Length: 309
Image 1: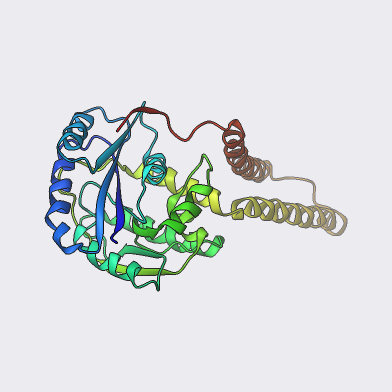
Image 2: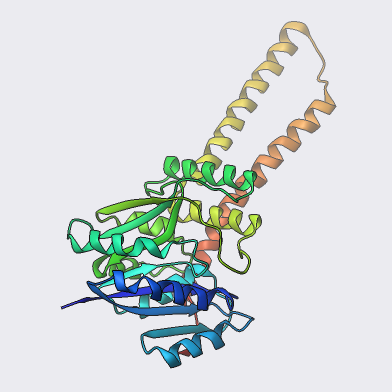
């Protein structure tokens, strides 16, 4: 008996790319001889005709299902909603812009069929087409995450991965509001096979990820899987206390030995500004963690559905 493969596809303003994605996957379906397919598109509050396209695909192919949000909740919510709706024995997450090559699907299925792996993940081996500054920050982010957290986040890792039902259920148990999927995928563990591929340009439309959005996403990831920033704030406080003690001793000794009068107003102002800046920085770190806790305690739903088929 064939297993069911659910293809989860988050979409936001992807009216042009969605039909091309569906057609491309359909073209390689003959190579997926050991599984049946179902498509689970998640319309993340698109403002173009994405929802209309999904309705048309559903009307002509009963294997196509979709969830449409009441507004834009973000890709993380889209991934979670798609995993919740997927019924497959295997579930794969893919970007609709075809930057996740569908040609890898047969190989991914074969690894899961072997029973040796519970998950087949992918990573890009290059970042051709990306701005150099963005690529540099991305590489540094992955290095930082692996140093300050216990979560394995591989450089170049994509959300494009195929999982068994066991892995999907484990991910769904992590119902946190502030989600960072790359960290969650690494945190749940299970035996994982990595596939590498070269960067692929999107087939249509424009990227929705600006540098600022990626930066905020990186900050969310660090705070979701590491308490290192809080430790850093404590270290700053300790350093400033030691420095202040040293200056006090220095000032007393200078007065007793050399009889110097207290002087140096400009330097004093600089020190006050430095200490105040460090204090505000540390308070900001604590505030960010408190804000995340505040949002979690509200127990708001991760997404709201407007339409579903």
